[in-house]
Image (cartoon, rainbow, N blue to C red; front, top):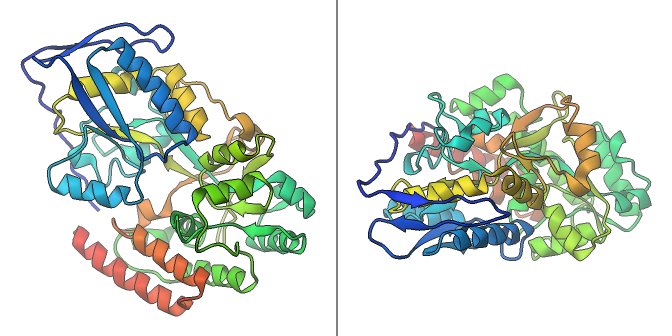
Length: 423
């Protein structure tokens, strides 16, 4: 997939004065041309009542209070967020700001204002360079956090089953842990076919350790290699046959999964750490953590890259206002608060790392720097648009609606078609 670098968006002749104030003592005014007041639409990509949307709403209120006449309309995520955004971009009806959900460079850069010259850009976390910067050094979204994910667990559930998460070094070890959980009457893995990114994550998490570096490059260059996919889907089919998934898989919602995790009714979830914040809402005393993902072919790893990141439409009529809003969010204390609410580490290096309830996992696996951080597999090795196929084929295996051969056939067909479209 190719991305095109952008020229800096043209600034109108009329001056715009705006205060990106301190979050502790907001003050300031804004004017935008001849408009006395105006509204910016921000598609947040965040579900209603999530901790990070609550924090973002609070910070946005402070920004608006310091800038009378400016309204930032925070729009929660819909179930068709990506599809809706695709239609709007194609129709020239982009929101002023939107959450790029991992695709600021590869999918959205041609629609977004480059931000590398903003004052806060000097604090851009270099761990995000590969995921978010093009060859010219441009990036197109403010990185709230640096996504670091493994396999999330409930420590009390594992303790009940006699499982020590620090001893899980291989998929064989993981399988033994699943068996122990099942024997203890605890759901080993909880996922969802309704909020179906959980099924997709299961595959995406495992694929990075199922292909050699050479095979991954072949995929990125357009040659479909079935070996790793078959290995992963065979493993998932085995877990399905052994009864390792939640019985309400087809109907479970994100809240259902968060509740099960918080209440120690499940052992493991393949998901970003942000879900642990939701789990704590159901049980504030839950003991949660994450472990590196075992590998089939090499060293165990964590998964990371762009997570919560916000870009500005180059078609917006209020680009300077949007830039000032992002500059406000990029203040160290605000970035720290947003990242903490997401359960991740900040995307800017001058913000404080607050791992909170996940401190033990952070100290064990992230801080020492010994565990490699790999990008999301679908973002670097699969063609744009492949995610839906990753999800649907994973779901078909978990539900037993397709066998591995059929699923791999669908993957190969869609891979070939989508790669051809990207050329």
